[in-house]
Image (spheres, rainbow, N blue to C red):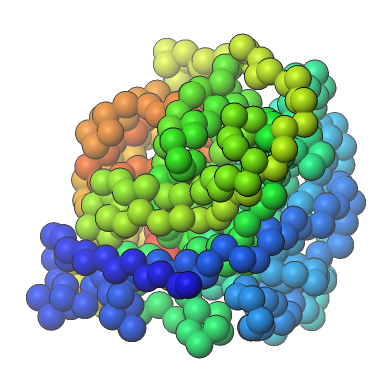
Length: 477
């Protein structure tokens, strides 16, 4: 039986006429509640591909809901692209043939690649044309992803199906003997807006301000799936592939998780949590022990309420279900240490850059969200950094909206968070490329820029914000 959870959201302090504030946080059907579909569809696992592969973004018919098909985008034959597995030191070669009727490209989110391979918004593949991405994998093991990045169309193309996980392995990670094979499960969590079973992406002006929220939560492309799990340890590689929705992930009833990695790979040691926030674009690598759960019992991956300002966080909901089977006599025990995270000393930074996250109060005046009052402009270099140099970047979110900030070309470390949660959470203790900044929070990041000259971008990974212009260019020289 379907259950609908309704949410009443306040308009906050947006400086807009009251008539606009009154409709600001409601979709065209008058609600933003989550609908679960009974957890009766099995969890699909995307096909796997190696470091040499073909991608053909195009249109497909896909079953998001049981018994119904809808038009989606796809890199191959399904709504999500293949899970790419590559080993450190390999060359990744992806031949892209654009079968869409519009331009697209591929951004390798989290990977350190040359500027002309990064999927910059200016480097597009036109409809009917092709491009070959080729670059060496020269970074530690981690869970990354790939998705389109054409300016003004990124959110729609991701929402409609263009996304996939990319896993890098290396000798250090393999030596840990972590759960693998059937016991290593990739989970791509996305919310979709469906009307009469059909996938739609049509944000209003107000939804461009807040983000476009779907009422149906999908995992690996299907709504509210289930997965049959044995009574043993599992490794879950989780990607928040939503355009705007933040999840406060937990396992019910009261089953904890061990975080072993985040955006940039393994943490120094496992971190025990009962819940953890995951913003758009962020990844989480966790270990879960099902061995103490009774055979036939059900464990739900859910999102719990959190203080996310005026636009989200007021609702808890279930995402997917695990049905627990018999114990397998698994002898795995989580290691006490995982890797060495060399902290970048603050005194190594040669420059501090400050970015104020601004919100425009009037319509028709350009982007609704900006950095230091500036919005994206093709060809304009907003910041210039030197290759090999370490800098501190500070982002100040004084408003009442959520902004996940993603910086291309680098992995960074979080030095501090003041205001809001007022600290660094367990999943942020390693290397990151995306940081979730809640209302009234200020974060300080430290990073060393690679020896790869060229133009890159940094932006909000609320993709509605990004498409609206919350993105700037920086050049490594």
